[in-house]
Length: 365
Image (cartoon, rainbow, N blue to C red; front, side, top):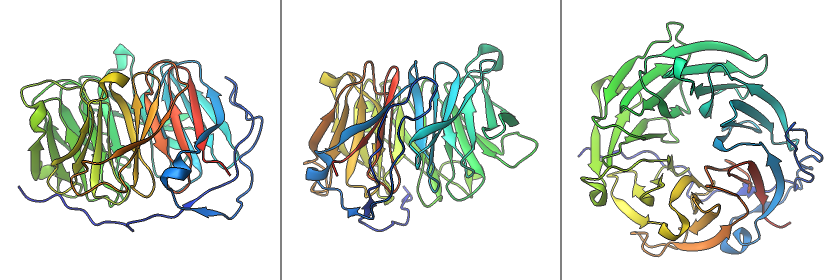
């Protein structure tokens, strides 16, 4: 197989810790307290620091959050929930700055775009099945409707370096789009040849994206050469001849690894070059893996579990085969599966979302 190697970033990120958030957020979304000022402290994540993670703010959203994502460069985040609502968070002020309802279309799988107040999300209402909406939250206006799926869209990713985004539906159809294209039609399509909940991920350099199908096959596509189809594919051998629904896939910030989450199969770490499995934890006792994210320095993986907890795994001291990854901390408190987890791209700030609340975690000062 041709290697799917991507350029790496710095091997160790220094994470800026901002002032702790105070107060709480009600259903209306106004913060009782702000994020505080930047105390100028620089902290490197260690097991001892991670062990001090505590809830700084709890956001009551009233229904299960299916997606939460920090913007790559701006101090904002977005989320979508089962109540057909999208929330825009101002992280520097520690509050929800905008709540938008989309009851006609429904909302799921929201992702941030290059503009912090514009998002993409998939419709959930049956009359609009397969539709993807490009929505400006600033003026609550749908900028474009992307139609090209006949089934429900189950995963989307945006290129970090271009206007390309990719979607996959439960029939296994992958569509590549240009967010700026007024025709709003797919640029190219591929068929994963199996149905169910597949997931997508894009590497931090914006060179490729992967599709992980329910038959356990990982396929890699070039962002600039998607019309040629996948240039590499590899099967997770333990999942061959099985059907595995996936919840999330995330490249590590340094581009070296991919973390995968499945409610039925647990979580995996695979190499980004040959997609070989380096680590597998079935999480049977925690009722499976429902979400996954990386710390900014690629040294920790956070897995949202079905029992309402988020597990923080250290891979900083693992050997080359990841056989010694260590469970450092279990963050509890959610009811229902932790369906979304996200680590801020440059701060020691972690978000976890459960059945009705989103919690923001910070290490002790």
